[in-house]
Amino acid sequence: MNGITGERRKFRREGEGPRREALVAAALAIVAESGPEAATVRAIATRAGVTGGLIRHYFATKEDLIRTAYTALMDRMLTDSTAMLDRAPQDDPVARLAAFVAASLSPPVTGAETVGLWAAFIRRACSDPAILAVHEATYLAYRDRLQAMIAALPRPADPATLRAQAIACNGVIDGLWLEASLLPDTFAPGEMARIGLAAVGAILGLDLTAASPPSLTTKGATE
Image (tube, rainbow, N blue to C red; front, top):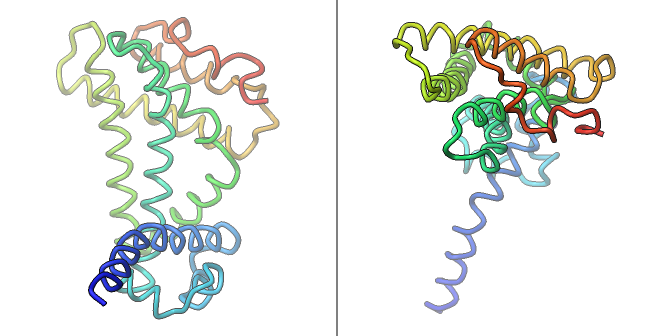
């Protein structure tokens, strides 16, 4: 019996992560289709194929699950933006910044489903302090990552300048990301990444386009 119990406990522990992720994925799918208000415990449980009681095992309230889902969405975008850094030279801060900017303006970071989810949560953030807090935390996480890359560039800059440049560059990337996601057929493959590199480079006084990864900025990059 002890061996069987141990095996069951091990199985339960190993299943915690995937089950929680499945509930978050179900919540995001419903939000994408019908908005946060439609993501009820019953709807999420039905989509995930579980009981409402299981949801309460992982999340104290439905609002807790919704906040977790929004955090997961934003964390995924940051992860996708930084994925290209694995292929960028570790000793070339200009190339690493270029890879980060280009990835932030290319699929899978850009996309109609992603921007739709983001817009649904942003609308709720106006009336939900908890969602607003998640937005602030994830915004600062991205901006801090961007600022660290700017600080690593081979040029002198004081902390106030670095902060101002990170805010400005982040604003440019946000605006281009929004249009690239909403109107993907309006722009040529890689066009938004090239524009973003040129704009961010102009703010920083660098030629980021020459240092950018060709796979994200050439014509066939997203085809």
